Amino acid sequence: MKQKLIACVLVLSGLISCSKSSNQPKGNAGGTDTTTFAFTAGADVSWVTQMEASGVAFFDTTGTVKDLFAILKEKGINAIRLRVWVNPTGGYCNTADVVAKALRAKAAGMNILIDFHYSDTWADPGDQTVPAAWANLSFSGLDSALGAYTTAVLDTLQNNGITPTWVQVGNEVSNGMLWPMGQASTNMAQFATLVSTGYKAVKSVFPKCKVIIHLSNGYDNAVYRWLFDGLKAGGASWDVVGMSMYPTDATWQSQDSLCLVNMQDMVSRYGSQVMICEAGYAVSEPTEALTFLSDLITKTKSVSGGIGVLYWEPEAYNGWQGYQMGAFNQLGRPTQALDAFLTP
Image (cartoon, rainbow, N blue to C red; front, side, top):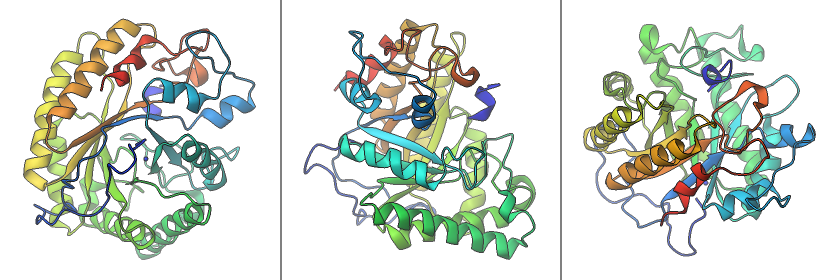
């Protein structure tokens, strides 16, 4: 999501099971779960501890100071997404910080999505930088480091009583991850190996957790087919295809329609579930943001394997770190954009 900076589900008790469907999956996807579950209305709030440490407060719609997780729950949010960086400057989004936030999400009754960037900083379609500690490793060493690191972070979560519903192996990996060795356009087979290692590591700790492979531009079917065909050919597995959507006033209607076609194709072509892992819209246009999100949620729900939509960092306000696509106004209160998640 870095390019936008300068640019797991509160599940109704007894309604969810993470067990695999008995149906045979298509392609290399892990299979579509046919169990009835609550639709995921989520938010990535990875900045929350850093914002709080900087003195930022959050308010509900009446102006009352409250914990961010409580405010989001009142807005229908039932899942929290948290990014993980290997050794970030300042410590935010490292393993300990992620555990602290995940415990708060669990206490709020929310399900959790863990988003591995496999970097010390932002990983996105333009940057997939190898962590400094892994920089001099061979490909075999890099693959082993990814597996060991994924297992260690998830073991730490488990030891703290946290069971994520989903785990992302990589963030916006439209051209692979851990460049150059895992760059899909030049080393698709090695990227597939890294994905397989991450998948196995997740399942070794949390066998019922769903593994997400997440790309940018959810409207770009050609890129999705290219990447997932490559992963399939390389023997990689996944459970959910994740997507990002950051349109404008001029593009949201066409992009939402194309995203619907892409979601339907991912389900039929690979047997995958689909999730909008990141969505955002200009904070200065809350009415339009509500319309966009409502439409995207409706379209996602209409797909047989559409399981949820998550907003990216709605709590960012007053231009926090230059980000202008949050969903809290200048007074630190949620805008009407988040009302899209109140629809049953």
